[in-house]
Image (cartoon, rainbow, N blue to C red; front, side):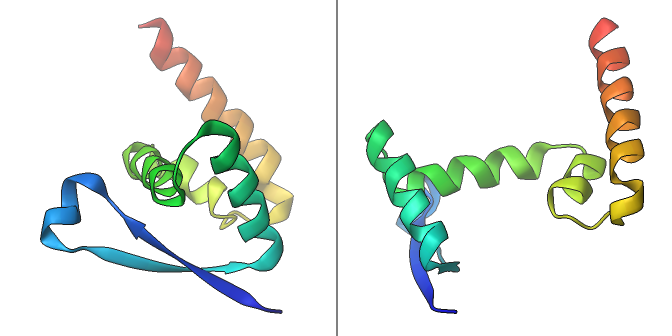
Length: 91
């Protein structure tokens, strides 16, 4: 499996020179190319926004997104998380 790397520059951090190298498989890189091109965005902008969103999310959602929940518990855990988020939205 060939991996490609995309350098991500976070605009608020660029003056400090912070960079990340993210290993991507060829199909993921191609999908990112299509997604970013269709929206007129750079790879860094797309990935930076995703990282910002992810970092602000509830740890339970982060756990699900990262696939850390056992497969047999995922649906139940996701339903519980949705109920909790709906309840929080009502308040």
